[in-house]
Length: 251
Image (cartoon, rainbow, N blue to C red; front, side):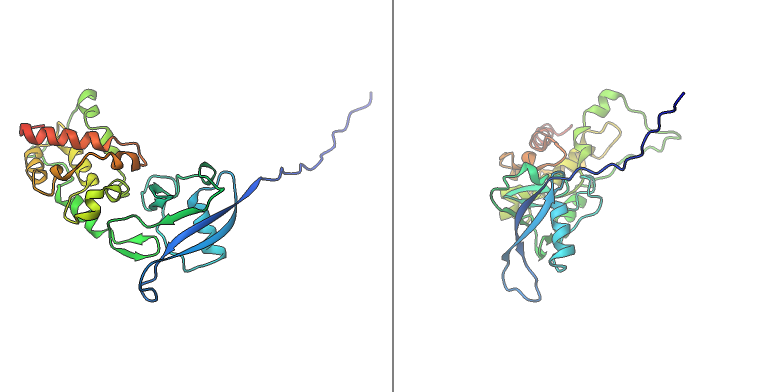
C-alpha cells in the first residue's frame, strides 16, 4: 500500500486592510505657545485601531512631543478622556472605523479644567471636588466579619459603583465650564454610591455638603453627563435621586 504524503505548505497571511485617517489635534506647549493651535496629521491605520492607536502612531513615528495621558488602554483606568469630534470619549474605546473618516477627526483636551499641555489637563480641581463628598464608607461599628448586605440593597447603588473618575461627565457639563466651584456630576455620582449604601452611616453629612449652592441644585439636567459617560452610568438619574434625598433629608 502506498502512504499518502501531506505537503507542509507555508500559509500566506492575509493582507490586513488599511485606511488613511487625518487627525487634527489641538496642540499647546506652555513653553512655546501663547494660545493653543491646531495641527493635522495623516496616519495609515487598520480596521480594529482606535483613536489611541492613532495617537500612539503619531507620537512614535511623526512627532514625539505630542503629549497625552493613557494607561490601561482598555477603558478601565479612565486616563485618556478627551474630546473627539466635539464629544467627550475615551480614546482607547473609540474605534476609528466608527467615525466619519471622509472628514478629519478633531481631537482636543476636555473642557473646564486648566490646560497643561496638548491633550493633558490639570485634574486637581476635579479630584478636590471628589474628595469633598467623602467618597468612602463611614460606619461606627466594627464587625468581626464582613458587613452583610442583601442583593436588593447592593443593587440600589450598583450603577454608580462603575465610575472610573475619567472626568468625561464633569467636563461635558456647561455649568462646570462656567462655574469652577460646582462639584460636578462625577463627585455627585460618587456621593450617590455611598448615600444609598445600606452599610454607610454618613448619608446626612454628604446630603448637607451637596445641599450647598454649588451642589446638586446647580445641575440643569442637560443630560450631557449621561451621554458622555463611557461606562453607561445613568448620571442624570443619580443626580435626580440625590436631589430627592436632599429634600427628604434621608436616602
